[in-house]
Image 1 (cartoon, rainbow, N blue to C red):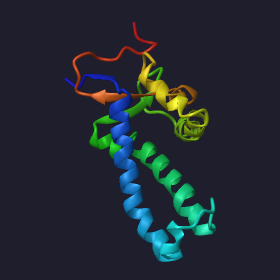
Image 2 (image 1 turned 90 degrees about the horizontal axis):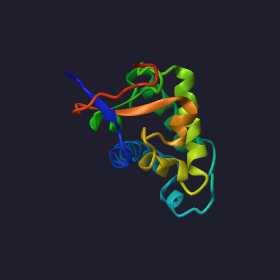
Image 3 (image 1 turned 120 degrees about the horizontal axis):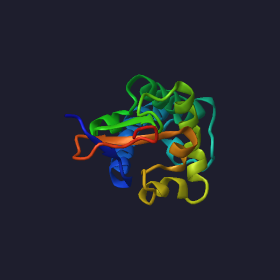
Length: 151
């Protein structure tokens, strides 16, 4: 039986560290090849088109595509987590995934409070989850999750 529970703060943090590490392994050499080693000494917020493309646009596209096709990023897959619709337990829509990604910015602005919220919320939802109507589940645990529409 594949029973599930809400994924908490620390397991989700671990998944995020895996995802960030994978992105850095890909992005750092490319940006160094384009801008040279002085890129890492520059204090400018944005150095140009490729800086924006590799630090913001391509990671966003990669994450959303991963969510759409697998309902998880590589880090979430490695830690046996999956993103589901909070009401039905089914796969979220592409719109929900895009809203969830944009919700990360809302979650981070006030001192990461929306991310920290995962640790105190009864359904382990960050603000980005609440905004998108999603929850993150951890597989193979003893008690199944009850969704709002279940009796």
